[in-house]
Length: 547
Ligand SMILES: C[S@@+](CC[C@H](N)C(=O)[O-])C[C@H]1O[C@@H](n2cnc3c(N)ncnc32)[C@H](O)[C@@H]1O
Image (cartoon, rainbow, N blue to C red; front, side, top):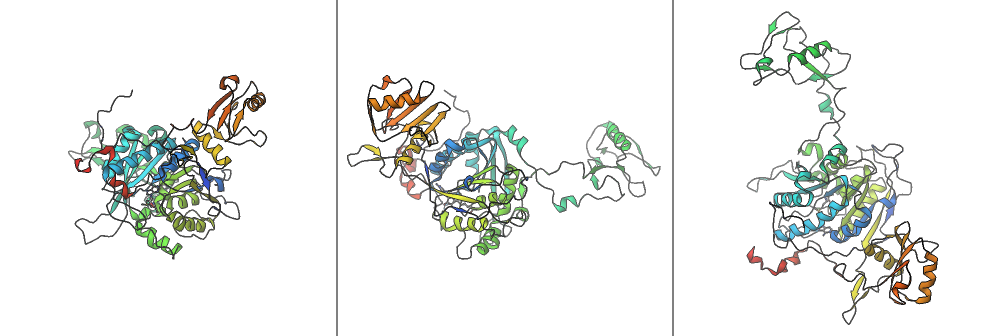
């Protein structure tokens, strides 16, 4: 048993974990969408890197806890960047979703989702969570527990609002973005730096026509602290001999200066009579710049930019979200955390900013959204992106012309339901294919029905298969299947009933549905959402007043 940590955040209901049913996902083809032409190669995609294909992008409507669980078997270890913008638990009622959960419930619900998100992340992957002061500090400590404190990367302060509200005590300008990695060392090696801005590049000048190009002052001049060895005399080309004023020291050693002189990279001013400057050339510095923790709206946009300057113009008939994230913000995050072709996930999709930006940047994406706005807001927005009609947001920066597509998926209902006598039975809404796919998930097999062998619904290895049927199998039927499977392969048969000695066929394992899966999870539980009604339930039966 693992030891209890010495320092931990605790809250009511912390030890309660839902036993989630791994659902299958069903496509709603009427809402899936793809461009006529294949997606063109975009932005920083190299010519031989494949553009995002229609099937790689998924928009899932439903509760994200069940959706994340549904994704786990296929996508564990695959996702490079998760961005989430969950309800901040502000206590204010938003038009499109409930926000204002009691703190313990909020923490439990976030923890349950973050544990699956951690499983989905690739080893060099990262999670970015926007949040404000209502829960930021509790969330930080809780995330330390899920990801390990050593995997915390940093907190970004994003200026979400460049204005000032005069009807409050202190006007809030920022949100936080907490960043966690699955493995900090691997993340550090994989993460991208930012491109230098024109402004930063313009700080490099070439006043002496140096053939090595523009340069700027390196770590030189004088400092207020240092050792006596940093107070040596320097003879300037003009003949003047200088030492730092009393109490000051050169910032560079004599050896560094001599080396720089040998390389002809010391500048003494136009007349050769100024204090020496050791040059740092633009051509020599690493290609990009390291991101900072302060992200002003002038660099990455604000809520207002997303609402007023982009979404209102893009979808004039649809009331935009209260706090959509600007595309420039997601562009920076996705740029730092991923490369073209990588998979990006947002399980609190809102108006679909993450998917729209990932799409334009040539990344694959998965989004999950519970609310109706999944089809009222996200679908129309993405259609415009795919049709090349969205020229706002980051479109011009990445030269977006349109292309690609996505599949619209819903969570299947529970595989088991209670019948009129209170017995768990296979949900009548399931057809044979759905049942086979769901059983593969439950039994740890990859669903891959064979065109040639009716008994091959999936596999767990090259020689181990699964067959799912609602039929009752006789001894003779099993004998025939066993002969076809042969001694080099094995088969798990999940059926309604069998009339045979289960031990009689060494290459077959027989299980009955639903008995084989009854105890695996909780069934017919559809709502794990951030629902305000949950407040009525007291976790662990403790009264709320005790908190
Ligand atoms: C702050 S909004 C996200 C806004 C988004 N970043 C954007 O730019 O438009 C949070 C979203 O999470 C969704 N949400 C809340 N609980 C959810 C759940 N259990 N499953 C899926 N989505 C959920 C809400 O419906 C809401 O749309």
